Image 1 (spheres, rainbow, N blue to C red):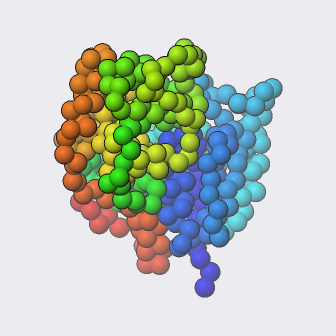
Image 2: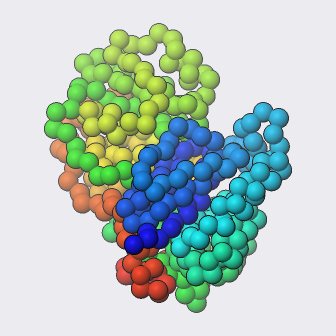
Image 3: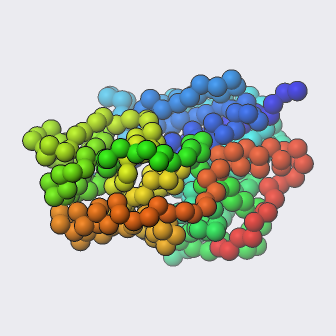
Length: 386
């Protein structure tokens, strides 16, 4: 029997968190679907091999952190040229008969690519009018409502182009957080999947006497690296392993390339992050979606510093701090003596025991497959409070 076909559209513009989550979803769906994966950012070496999985790369686009403008990371290639090349690729792929089109974040984000996404939905529907178009959304959406313009845009796009919304969260800990309230008359089926992470693994009882310090693949948080190096001088009996972020600011790269305390070592950014966590007694990091899921998945206690330019990381970090899974740091806590105190307290604390649904990738596949077989829209099986 033919497997249904799933097309996933993912655009990462700054870090690689969105890409990591989408690839985990794709991996969770390959048992039930033939999966085509559209990656709109540059190739960063993250993929996987499986029967029925095809990874397509669009002409890459990124967004400048300083002015939020799109740009091509390829020298001499303009945004317009990239968009034209992407349109050609999308037009070719959309001729295939897909049963489900999963679009990550849009219309809650990626509005700069709205024209491209709307055209993709149109072309996929022309090939298969019965295709289900679903928005794949993390737990927290950031942004300002701009006197209702954001709300009106999102609701109109959902009404015109989408059949359902999947929220990758466990509502026992964190219900969908939006900068506005969706119109209840929208009647858009909403389903919680659980949080998305790599296949669930169990924490090790034989951890090494080390602390893992990391920033993920983003460009912020260098102050956390600097503070950890200074705190390490006050805790010489434990090793600090610092993961070099590929986008770390030059002044912090210079710090890590200079003279460091004897108990501090640096390693290159790795796709084996969870294996590093499994060997560590403690993690010091930012509080992005994927990093927090990595902590929960490995049972590793974390000291996390939320990115304060928006409320996303603070909201998530505080939710899990209340559950005892981590401690939230502030800028005050980056003073060397204060950070060293927090580290010692965390190392001495009992291991937290919480039950979180981390099977969002597999649940996503089952939800989509069930509703295809039943020929019905997504069913809202969990009570939602928006």
